[in-house]
Image 1 (spheres, rainbow, N blue to C red):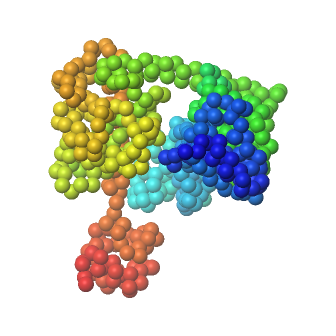
Image 2 (spheres, one colour):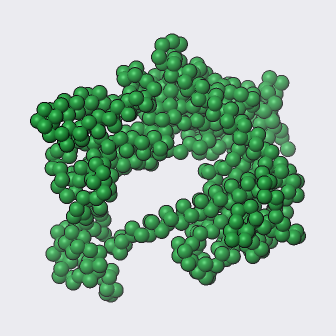
Image 3 (spheres, rainbow, N blue to C red):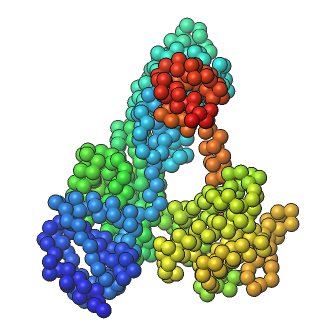
Length: 613
């Protein structure tokens, strides 16, 4: 069999000098590395002289069994394609941005009485979006201010149209109640316009207007109205006092700083929009220990902004490799000018120093937590007679109410704590499982989980294989799991079942393992607390997923399945008949009278409910 160097030499014979992206693949078709090049032939030729390569790259070359190439018109296109492919395929030897979830926004929709709410995901709804915010907590804080200051409604459109009297939010001065005409629509939309100004960075202008209105109301001896303006001013003052920057210093920018200790890197990002600090978040990219901080920061930028809009400027703590190329790529991908800067003086440098301090503190905390986690994993291996500390623990739990909305959940814990992007939920599909059959549910979940694992990644050395299974349950659940694993031919996979103690007391749990008598751990054993935390996280995820499933079904309407009936026609039917049940019982002639419902659609609706041939 040819070695990696010989394989690469063969590709060089026919490789062009064009820009593009290359992939290095091992014998099991796993992608090892994805790189970009201004000149593919020149870049790939660097891999054939092992004496000039480090140990990590040498190992990568020796594992390579084939390569794939995609040519592009320019190096910028290659950079954009590389970032997208790295995020999608997660190669083993690349720097990887982990936990890359979308950020929440505030949405003010385009309803006649606009609603304000948090939004995450694609921007398909009409209206105006403000963000991104670093976290849901940052969004919630801003929404509270919008309610206190501008009295905007947060209720759904269906609640808005169905109200006959104001809700509690009106009573506590958090909503102007346009739903029941406590405020006219023109006046309400003035409040909406003020909220737009606030989120666009014009809070000082709003403050001046509110001050003038308060003084005018006071002069007219309308003290109740003046008090309302006073309270709104207090809310605005509270927001401004929490900002870490002065108005106008940084209007629209991301501040990104990196800090590196012991071969690990923390990247801290602060979002400044409309002159306000909209929160910050820490990231810990996966990379080799020998890779420099600047190299990690450059890879972070390319991947982070692959699916996110860029601000007008990005302030960096360090000058990064190919900074001009990355800047050009960000401008092209977002179709707007974005400038990368590394401040050396002034208030912007102060922001960078603040971000560096946060990055350092986040990394120090993470390293301390990792050290503690490693000790717990070693102790777990000793207690359960494992060959080595587990790198991946999977915890399973079920949730249902008398068999309804039954689902099973998998939570994953690794060497750095919970791996939330690996969590999975399984809606129970089998019709043969009786209501509340926990054993049957556990069997289905484990069968589906490992059938797919064997099909997609059968190699037990793959990191997606668990080193330990933890089951919430007792002897019966353990037997069910072992039966499924035996049927699938999975041997020597350690399984532990945790049964709640008498009266469900924490600290008196029984542990069940194959070929061992049930046992307890000492009440103050750190491993017991660790395992309780794993079980509780699985229980939290299962309960949360179950509630989401119930809530989703709760809001389903019998009109949802009607043929050729979208949201507009559904609304017309409800307005005409008053309820979904009345639509179901309506005569064909009545259905034909609804505005927007043709005779053919009326017939389809009637047939749907009456099973007509």
